[in-house]
Image 1 (cartoon, rainbow, N blue to C red):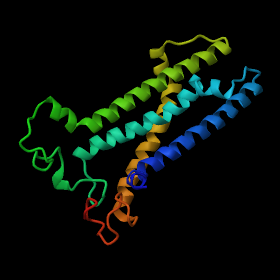
Image 2: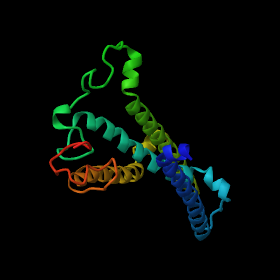
Image 3: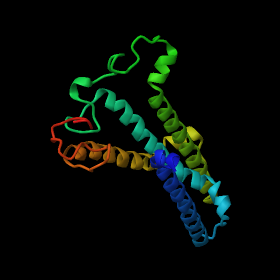
Image 4: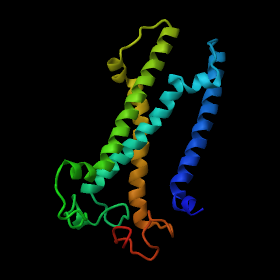
Length: 213
C-alpha cells in the first residue's frame, strides 16, 4: 500500500492513459468501419485496425504535440520568466544557475555531468522527434493508401511532409498545446488550488513568483 501511495500520481495517469487509449481504439475502429461501409470499402477487424497506419497516425499526432509542449516548456523556463506564476523561476534566477545552486559544486564538469544536467530536455526532445517521425510515416502511408483507392498519384515521404494536409493536422495540435501552457502560466498567477504543487499557497500574493512564495 505504501508503494501504491508513493507512486499514486504516475499510476493514476498511466491507468487513465491506458483506458483512454483502449477507448480510442474501440471508437476509432467503429468509425473506420462505418466510413468504409459508407464508401463501399473493405472493413477491418479490431486488431487489424489497431496495428494499422490509420490508428497509428491518430495516436502519434497527439503524442508528438504533447512532448513538444513539454520540451519547449522545459527549455523556455530556463531563460524566460512570468512574474507571479508558480510555473516560473523568480526574475533574478534566469539561466542555468550556478553549480552551488544546482548542488553540483566541486564535481567534474565533463560530458557525463553535461548530459545528466540536460537529460530531461534531451529525452523529452528525443521522444518528440521520434513521435513526430512516426506521425509523418503513418500519415504518409494513409495518404498513399487513400490515393491508390481513388486512382490518384502517390507521394514520397518528403513531398508528403510538405503538404498542407500534413501541416494542418500538425499545427492543429501544436496551437492547442501552446495555448494550454500559456493559459496555465498566466492563470496560476491569479488563481489557486489548495494542496497542489502547481499552485502557490492560497494566501500568497499575486505578485509572488514560484511555488514557495
